[in-house]
Amino acid sequence: MLIAGGEVGVVAVQLARIARKRVIGTGSPSSAGYLQRLGAEPVFYGEGLLDRIHDLGGTVTAALDLHGTDTVDVAHMLAVLDNRICTIAATFPVDDIRSAVELQTGRHVRSKVVVDL
Image (cartoon, rainbow, N blue to C red):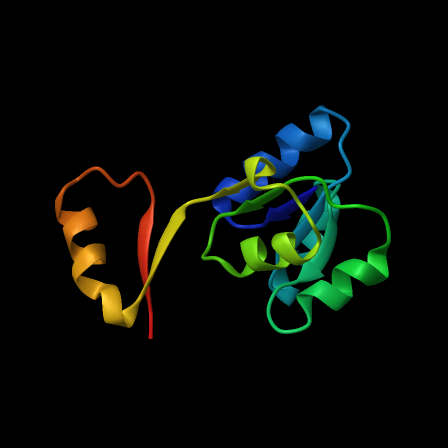
């Protein structure tokens, strides 16, 4: 299981550990010790994430991305099924910014709207 390690991610890590799941927690270098104390295997996010996860071994079966879409992208590369990936971000290319604004102003978005520049 791959979980991002922010405030909400910390709760997700704890719930996954209660369920006796293996947790790979992505986060900053400064969060590594905290993630370990929660029972997660810390791995730094950013460029090279896929390789760092491969180095840990095992199979990733689900992913939770609470920051953007980088973890989702890596989950797809790890062949995690779409129905086992959860994210809080809806992304739009800058050329389609109008759709992003319409979604946000329509108040029907249940996630963050991200515009890729």
